[in-house]
Each structure stands twice: as structure tokens, then as C-alpha cells.
Image (tube, rainbow over all chains, first blue to last red):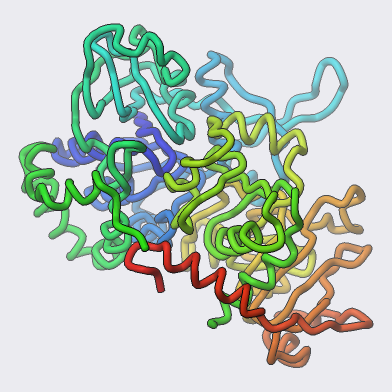
Length: 272
Length: 238
């Protein structure tokens, strides 16, 4: 099964990723432009056997230790693109077309996956293509949803909309679910209409340790701490035991984080 | 002042006011934010996360930070930024980091060792596109032959005809450009470093410009700006 947890640094559906770990899912193909910590954790937990991606870094910190280990030891297969190619694959999926044309640079990446060009029927120009990416399920996390499943987002949207529209099934977690029609006047922040969304769950702090603009900041301390946790395979398993397998659900995970931590993230870290 | 700080300041000076720059992760991000606060207040900082004309109050830790969005002119879906702005040539200059570079300015930020059996698996391309680049200067990094071409430099025969392709490379030892054949040339030395040192730390003989210049020491204003930026980081930076 092919899964896409969407969101570029912002609104990453961590709670959904953690639940996939708790349910001990296996053999998933995980797609994300930026695997980020969420896929590093899922890879460490043995959820994935393939990762489709374009930038496997820990934003502002460095690399992803579990991903590195799994690739360097051949434990997972990878299917790698540039960001532009990755979003172009989603554009094709979202538009219901088999491929997407783009002016893509000649790099060594092209030798590691099928790379075809088309000849423009109007100008004769040869243009690169990428194949459509159609996830079985895309999960998005949003600041707000209404009872009809309409999803609303503020701030960076990254590839969320294309990743959702490309998928057969869209699942959403939302910081809060409001009465139907609450955001009729805020239509420019609509991410997806409810009819394109299969299910929505209210999951406060569902993006922790990433952030939700206007609600809480990124837990930068955790992003920095992750390198030391994940670099050591045993330490990493202990972390998963304690924080994911050892918690019944996301509420327990948040309770373990503690109200003080959540308050601090909501207020933003003090400056000056 | 460590060597990264001096690299950040030297490359900040290469950015011009009113330029539209696609800012990469790491040192380029620090450099662009210095330029914006000094000689290039109208620099249009664009981030591949979709942010157009960012005016961050704090030094963003990454290119997906909320501080980039707060006062930005626009936040676009990533696809729109790549398709409608980058692909169509509306961005003047790209500013990237990399693990390795060769004499044509090809960059590697993907893998050290063979791709299928990597010694070190790096982050990969992300949005690496138009290029100005930035890296510590060692023999491993200035390689006659790259392990992997992530971002293309000048074509094998001659330089890019229309001014595209890599323009400047900044390292802890010097500043480099490219001649009319698309080969790298040393243009200037960083404070306290020599051309001989550059040869010692490069995997091929990089030629020097006829008039080799000295990069001026960071000014007190540049140093103050950098420290003010660092002080906005969580915990006051370091």
C-alpha cells in the first residue's frame, strides 16, 4: 500500500504516522517530498519497505539517521526525485493524467528510475516527463475542519493539496472540528472540499513535533535531540517503545509530553 | 568568527539589491538574511517551501519555518513556485550548498560512494536548481570526478551560453568563478589564506585569475548583523 503523509515542514501528520507505528503496519511504500522525522521514526519502526522522496534531511539540523542506516544497509528501497519532479508527479496524479511534462535538469538521478521524454506535438521540442504518483491514501493535518469535512489551512501548504487530490482516499486530522459552514467567508484558505475527504478526526497537537501556524510552534528542541536518539539503533528502539508503542494513543503521547511543554509551544519561545 | 561565518559574509556581498534569489538551506540562508539587512534591503528572498519575498524577524532554522511566512508577500503551493516561477525563469539566482563540486560546477548533495551502495547517504536534491554554491574546501569535496551529479554545472563543452549555470562558488579558502569554457577559476582569497593552500585542498589544479583579489575582512557592521541574527535563534543561538 502506498501512503503519502503530506506537508512541507508545516502541519506534518505526526499523530497519524505514530498510529501507523502503533498498529505495527509493515511493507508500506511511504511517499513524501521531505521524509522528515515522521518517516525516520516510521522507518526505524520497520513500517516501510520503500520510500519515494526528494529531500531526506532533518530541517535546519542535518540528516535523518534511521533513513541513512536503512539505505546504507539496503534495508529499504528508494525511489528518488527532485522536489519539482515530485510535485509534478502529484500534479499528474491530481489531474488524472498518466504523466507530467517539465523542464528538468540532466542529473544522475535520471539513471536510477524510468525517465522518458515526449516530443511536443506543436513545437517538436523534446520535454522530460515524470509518471503520475497516485497514493492509495494521503493523510493531511489541518488547523481547522468543519463537520462536513471541509479542510482549512493557514501558512505553508507545500504539496498538501496536490498530494491529497492525487490520492484515491484522503484522510484528515484537524486541530479542531467546527460546525458546518463556519468558514464560508474564509474560502481562500480552503485546502479541500469535504466531498474529496473520506474521514476527519479531531486531533489537537496532531502535528507535534512539527508546527501549526497560528496555534503552536515547532518543537525545535526535539528536532535537534532526534539526531542523537536515532543515530543509535538501540536508543531509537527504546524511544519508540517509550513514546509510541508505550502510549495507547495521541492523547497519552501528549499527556506524556506534559501540559507545560504544550503551553510553551503554544506561546512560542521567548525571544530577545 | 568561524570559517562558516566568514563564508556567509563573503557570499552575502555577492547578492545584489532587488535580485530575486532562491535561498537554499544552511549557510546560504544565513548569507541571504545578512545581505537583506545590509546592502540589499530589497532582495527578494524566495524559498522552495513556497514563500515569496520573505521578511523573517528571526533567523529561520529551516526553509519551512513559520517566521518565513509571517511577513511574506505570498505563500504559494510548491508546485506553483517550481512550475510558474522557477521553470519560467523569473528567479535571478539560486544559492545552494553541496557536499562536493567539480571543475564544471556540477554539485553533489546526494551520496558519497556508489548510489546503490552508498558510503554516506546525504539528503538528496530537494529543489537544487539555478546555482551559486557554498562549501568547506577539502580534497574530498573539490573532486575531479563526482560520486553523483545532483545539480548540473556547465555542459562538458563550453559554458552555458545565456549566462545560466553556476556563477560563483564560495568556500572557507576563496571565491571562484568560471571562465568562458565553463572551467572553475580562483578569483579571490579569503582573509589569511593562500592560493597554494587552495591547490593543496583541491582534487585538481584550479587555475587562478590574472589579478587574484583578497576578500576584505568582515566589517564591524557585518559582524554585528550576523550576531544579531544568531541572537534570534532559540536559546540565543551558537
